[in-house]
View 1 (cartoon, rainbow, N blue to C red):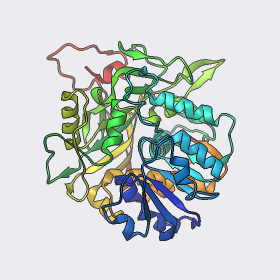
View 2 (view 1 turned 90 degrees about the vertical axis):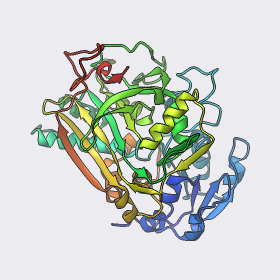
View 3 (view 1 turned 120 degrees about the horizontal axis):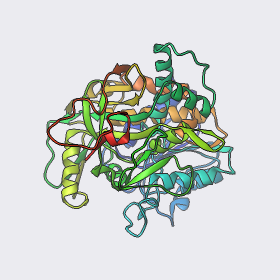
View 4 (view 1 turned 135 degrees about the vertical axis):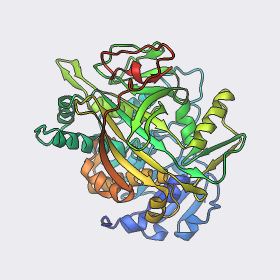
Length: 469
């Protein structure tokens, strides 16, 4: 693996869950960060021993609106890097702070302060990722330069925005479509339209298993429990394509901002959709809200005199590990109350992989999936203290960090703003088998005749056909 240029600044990591633990060993490997230059701010002392093993100091202090600046000021200055891998700490507040201090910033999720996701006095729109994104875009509107801050750059959101662009170029080559190399958002959108892409799924199947089964009143996952639970209780959200002609009965528009996405008046972990990956085949995934569902749809929009002429439908279709599915079933039965016990599987995982990619649909040749097949065995060989899932996130972070350090004065950027080749150059060595495969699947294929369903037989790529009633 080719190491990036040595980073001489300090690195401050907020949070030290599964992703942080997997990230720490790779900072010296990829960026030459010396052990004494890493500080970890977390709510309590590190009982894993990983921080001490790699010489990182732990500052056990919960951050809140009243103390975060006081805690972080001695730790961050010009040219340092803040990696926000926490929950319940405002991304916008941290970006403002880093800008003032002249420090780099990167997070994997646009987080608000606590009390927003579960506030019944707020509308679904106000609790959405769409609203959080619009607030971030408003913040950057007049700040197009300054210390680079990369918003929502993990695996998904993050890495998948680069995978979509690579997939489009692969499809163009394999269908003999001659195109100029895209250099703008409009060029990418025009390429997608030329390939008749109507729908893009972030199609993920996590098949990792453990020799320790889920217990009653326990939530088990291969990455953050709290992060998954929080996003899962937000409204289901999706980029809304220009080809759609059936309006979902519980859907709503936001009435402000880019208008590239809609929400459903139900939680994402109560919303299932049909999707497909090459190894798993057809499956039912959860339509959990993610930032890329909105940003990819927004960046792949074409307009003529203000009228939308092209936009794909974009959303997540997530099948987590089997014990996480059981955990979600228990959460639903308890009226969306999180279990008292939480466990992140890692060392006890005995097999399986995370098949994470993008599924592009509508082309006459068939559907095209492009992404990472990373087994637990491969993950353990590539980097310590990782699951397949956490390492895919870490790979996206590494790609985002490398881009930020090469572009230090870019201001606030989203994954779609980054050079996809830079991101993949750094990330791919940690992603196992990165492949593209065609398939003949559609959401109408093999549907049971035993029960009547609402379907659009004329156009299989209508959202109506994906949604599981």
